[in-house]
Image 1 (cartoon, rainbow, N blue to C red):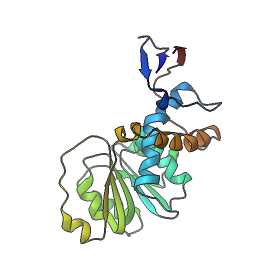
Image 2 (image 1 turned 90 degrees about the horizontal axis):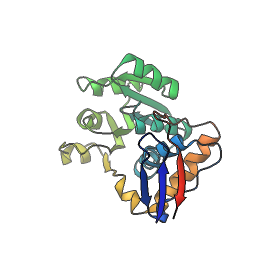
Image 3 (image 1 turned 120 degrees about the horizontal axis):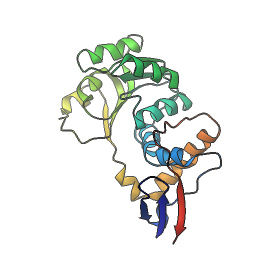
Image 4 (image 1 turned 120 degrees about the vertical axis):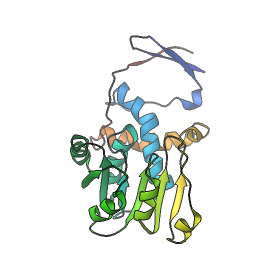
Amino acid sequence: MVALALDSPEGATVTVSERLVFPVSTGITDGQALVLVRDGTTAWHLLRTCAHLRPDESIVVHDAMGGVGSLAVQLARSFGAGKVIATETSQLRRRRAVKLGADIAVEAGVEGLCERLVEANDGRQVDVVLDPGGMFSPSIDAVAPFGRVVCHGADRAESVELKRIHGGSRAVIGFWFAHCLERPEMIARALSELFGLTSAGRLRPLVDDDYSLTEPGR
Protein backbone atom coordinates (compact mmCIF):
# COMPACT_ATOMS: atom_id res chain seq x y z
CA MET A 1 0.00 0.00 0.00
CA VAL A 2 1.07 3.59 -0.66
CA ALA A 3 0.04 6.62 1.42
CA LEU A 4 -0.57 9.84 -0.49
CA ALA A 5 -1.12 13.19 1.20
CA LEU A 6 -3.24 15.94 -0.33
CA ASP A 7 -1.65 19.35 0.17
CA SER A 8 -5.03 20.97 0.85
CA PRO A 9 -6.49 22.98 3.76
CA GLU A 10 -7.87 19.74 5.18
CA GLY A 11 -4.50 17.97 4.90
CA ALA A 12 -6.18 14.70 3.93
CA THR A 13 -4.22 11.48 3.50
CA VAL A 14 -5.40 8.49 1.49
CA THR A 15 -4.00 4.98 1.20
CA VAL A 16 -4.24 3.13 -2.10
CA SER A 17 -3.04 -0.11 -3.60
CA GLU A 18 0.28 0.09 -5.46
CA ARG A 19 -1.53 -1.33 -8.49
CA LEU A 20 -3.49 1.93 -8.65
CA VAL A 21 -0.49 4.28 -8.43
CA PHE A 22 0.65 5.69 -11.77
CA PRO A 23 3.59 7.97 -12.65
CA VAL A 24 2.61 11.48 -13.74
CA SER A 25 4.22 12.79 -16.91
CA THR A 26 6.45 15.84 -16.76
CA GLY A 27 4.63 19.13 -17.26
CA ILE A 28 1.30 17.90 -15.92
CA THR A 29 0.11 19.53 -12.70
CA ASP A 30 -1.22 17.50 -9.79
CA GLY A 31 -4.66 19.01 -10.35
CA GLN A 32 -4.66 17.96 -13.99
CA ALA A 33 -3.49 14.46 -13.06
CA LEU A 34 -6.33 14.05 -10.56
CA VAL A 35 -8.88 15.12 -13.17
CA LEU A 36 -7.43 12.80 -15.79
CA VAL A 37 -7.35 9.73 -13.53
CA ARG A 38 -11.12 9.56 -13.14
CA ASP A 39 -12.86 11.90 -15.57
CA GLY A 40 -10.20 11.45 -18.24
CA THR A 41 -10.17 7.66 -17.93
CA THR A 42 -13.96 7.65 -18.13
CA ALA A 43 -14.06 9.88 -21.21
CA TRP A 44 -11.33 7.84 -22.91
CA HIS A 45 -13.10 4.52 -22.37
CA LEU A 46 -16.46 5.94 -23.38
CA LEU A 47 -14.97 6.76 -26.77
CA ARG A 48 -12.40 4.01 -27.25
CA THR A 49 -13.75 0.96 -25.41
CA CYS A 50 -17.51 1.50 -25.43
CA ALA A 51 -18.42 3.56 -28.50
CA HIS A 52 -15.45 2.49 -30.65
CA LEU A 53 -15.62 5.95 -32.19
CA ARG A 54 -14.41 5.89 -35.78
CA PRO A 55 -12.96 8.79 -37.76
CA ASP A 56 -15.59 11.00 -39.42
CA GLU A 57 -18.43 9.72 -37.20
CA SER A 58 -20.71 12.27 -35.57
CA ILE A 59 -20.95 12.32 -31.79
CA VAL A 60 -23.18 14.02 -29.23
CA VAL A 61 -21.67 14.86 -25.84
CA HIS A 62 -24.30 15.74 -23.24
CA ASP A 63 -23.26 17.90 -20.26
CA ALA A 64 -20.35 19.04 -22.39
CA MET A 65 -18.84 21.36 -19.77
CA GLY A 66 -18.94 18.78 -16.98
CA GLY A 67 -15.81 16.96 -15.88
CA VAL A 68 -16.24 13.99 -18.21
CA GLY A 69 -18.01 15.89 -20.97
CA SER A 70 -15.37 18.61 -21.35
CA LEU A 71 -12.69 15.97 -21.86
CA ALA A 72 -14.88 13.86 -24.14
CA VAL A 73 -15.43 16.87 -26.42
CA GLN A 74 -11.69 17.42 -26.74
CA LEU A 75 -10.88 13.73 -27.15
CA ALA A 76 -13.54 13.25 -29.81
CA ARG A 77 -11.96 16.09 -31.78
CA SER A 78 -8.49 14.62 -31.27
CA PHE A 79 -9.71 11.16 -32.34
CA GLY A 80 -10.97 12.52 -35.65
CA ALA A 81 -14.73 12.68 -35.11
CA GLY A 82 -16.56 14.06 -38.12
CA LYS A 83 -18.82 16.36 -36.11
CA VAL A 84 -18.84 17.00 -32.37
CA ILE A 85 -22.22 18.19 -31.08
CA ALA A 86 -22.38 19.43 -27.50
CA THR A 87 -25.44 20.01 -25.35
CA GLU A 88 -25.49 22.41 -22.42
CA THR A 89 -27.99 24.30 -20.29
CA SER A 90 -26.91 27.91 -20.83
CA GLN A 91 -25.66 30.01 -23.70
CA LEU A 92 -22.43 30.73 -21.83
CA ARG A 93 -21.70 27.03 -21.30
CA ARG A 94 -22.54 26.33 -24.94
CA ARG A 95 -20.06 28.98 -26.09
CA ARG A 96 -17.40 27.46 -23.85
CA ALA A 97 -18.07 23.99 -25.28
CA VAL A 98 -17.47 25.31 -28.78
CA LYS A 99 -14.20 26.90 -27.64
CA LEU A 100 -13.13 23.50 -26.29
CA GLY A 101 -13.63 21.89 -29.69
CA ALA A 102 -17.31 21.19 -30.33
CA ASP A 103 -18.49 22.08 -33.82
CA ILE A 104 -21.85 23.18 -32.51
CA ALA A 105 -23.64 23.32 -29.16
CA VAL A 106 -27.39 23.08 -28.66
CA GLU A 107 -29.78 23.65 -25.75
CA ALA A 108 -29.93 20.65 -23.42
CA GLY A 109 -33.62 20.55 -22.53
CA VAL A 110 -35.31 17.21 -23.24
CA GLU A 111 -38.24 18.82 -25.07
CA GLY A 112 -37.42 18.83 -28.79
CA LEU A 113 -33.87 17.58 -28.16
CA CYS A 114 -33.97 14.79 -30.75
CA GLU A 115 -34.93 17.28 -33.46
CA ARG A 116 -32.20 19.72 -32.39
CA LEU A 117 -29.55 17.00 -32.53
CA VAL A 118 -30.58 15.89 -36.01
CA GLU A 119 -30.69 19.49 -37.20
CA ALA A 120 -27.23 20.13 -35.73
CA ASN A 121 -25.95 17.15 -37.74
CA ASP A 122 -27.15 18.68 -41.01
CA GLY A 123 -30.44 16.79 -40.98
CA ARG A 124 -28.91 13.36 -40.43
CA GLN A 125 -29.14 11.07 -37.42
CA VAL A 126 -25.97 10.87 -35.31
CA ASP A 127 -23.58 7.96 -34.87
CA VAL A 128 -22.70 8.15 -31.16
CA VAL A 129 -24.24 9.72 -28.06
CA LEU A 130 -22.64 9.94 -24.60
CA ASP A 131 -25.46 10.13 -22.05
CA PRO A 132 -24.64 10.86 -18.39
CA GLY A 133 -28.27 10.23 -17.43
CA GLY A 134 -31.65 11.75 -18.16
CA MET A 135 -31.18 12.13 -21.92
CA PHE A 136 -31.69 8.56 -23.09
CA SER A 137 -35.11 8.76 -24.73
CA PRO A 138 -34.45 11.67 -27.11
CA SER A 139 -30.90 10.42 -27.66
CA ILE A 140 -31.84 6.94 -28.86
CA ASP A 141 -34.31 8.43 -31.32
CA ALA A 142 -31.57 10.65 -32.75
CA VAL A 143 -29.19 7.74 -33.38
CA ALA A 144 -28.70 6.35 -36.88
CA PRO A 145 -28.73 2.61 -37.70
CA PHE A 146 -25.64 0.92 -36.23
CA GLY A 147 -25.09 3.91 -33.96
CA ARG A 148 -24.38 3.67 -30.23
CA VAL A 149 -25.63 5.32 -27.05
CA VAL A 150 -23.17 5.02 -24.17
CA CYS A 151 -24.78 5.52 -20.75
CA HIS A 152 -22.55 6.62 -17.86
CA GLY A 153 -22.66 8.70 -14.72
CA ALA A 154 -25.48 8.72 -12.20
CA ASP A 155 -27.67 5.64 -11.94
CA ARG A 156 -31.04 6.92 -13.10
CA ALA A 157 -33.97 4.63 -13.71
CA GLU A 158 -34.61 4.89 -17.44
CA SER A 159 -36.20 1.93 -19.17
CA VAL A 160 -34.89 0.62 -22.47
CA GLU A 161 -37.46 -0.73 -24.89
CA LEU A 162 -35.97 -3.54 -26.95
CA LYS A 163 -37.94 -2.55 -30.05
CA ARG A 164 -36.25 0.86 -30.03
CA ILE A 165 -32.89 -0.89 -30.17
CA HIS A 166 -33.31 -3.73 -32.64
CA GLY A 167 -35.90 -1.79 -34.65
CA GLY A 168 -33.27 0.86 -35.36
CA SER A 169 -30.20 -1.42 -35.41
CA ARG A 170 -28.79 0.55 -32.48
CA ALA A 171 -26.60 -0.41 -29.54
CA VAL A 172 -26.85 0.71 -25.92
CA ILE A 173 -23.69 0.35 -23.84
CA GLY A 174 -23.19 1.02 -20.15
CA PHE A 175 -20.03 2.20 -18.39
CA TRP A 176 -19.16 2.37 -14.69
CA PHE A 177 -15.74 3.67 -13.63
CA ALA A 178 -15.50 1.36 -10.61
CA HIS A 179 -15.00 -1.61 -12.93
CA CYS A 180 -11.76 -0.02 -14.17
CA LEU A 181 -10.43 -0.04 -10.60
CA GLU A 182 -10.62 -3.83 -10.75
CA ARG A 183 -8.54 -3.73 -13.96
CA PRO A 184 -5.70 -1.22 -13.37
CA GLU A 185 -4.35 -1.87 -16.86
CA MET A 186 -7.44 -0.13 -18.23
CA ILE A 187 -6.53 3.01 -16.29
CA ALA A 188 -2.87 2.78 -17.28
CA ARG A 189 -3.75 2.42 -20.96
CA ALA A 190 -6.01 5.45 -20.88
CA LEU A 191 -3.60 7.59 -18.86
CA SER A 192 -0.75 6.86 -21.24
CA GLU A 193 -2.59 8.60 -24.07
CA LEU A 194 -4.24 11.23 -21.87
CA PHE A 195 -0.93 12.34 -20.35
CA GLY A 196 0.64 12.44 -23.79
CA LEU A 197 -2.11 14.61 -25.24
CA THR A 198 -2.03 16.93 -22.23
CA SER A 199 1.76 17.31 -22.34
CA ALA A 200 1.50 18.13 -26.05
CA GLY A 201 -1.10 20.82 -25.37
CA ARG A 202 -3.84 18.98 -27.27
CA LEU A 203 -5.94 18.26 -24.18
CA ARG A 204 -6.86 20.77 -21.48
CA PRO A 205 -8.30 19.29 -18.27
CA LEU A 206 -10.49 21.82 -16.46
CA VAL A 207 -9.20 22.07 -12.91
CA ASP A 208 -11.40 23.76 -10.27
CA ASP A 209 -9.19 23.27 -7.21
CA ASP A 210 -5.44 23.25 -6.87
CA TYR A 211 -4.21 20.17 -5.02
CA SER A 212 -0.67 18.92 -4.62
CA LEU A 213 0.19 15.26 -4.16
CA THR A 214 3.10 14.18 -1.99
CA GLU A 215 4.27 10.76 -0.92
CA PRO A 216 4.99 10.74 2.84
CA GLY A 217 5.89 7.07 3.04
CA ARG A 218 4.92 3.50 2.41
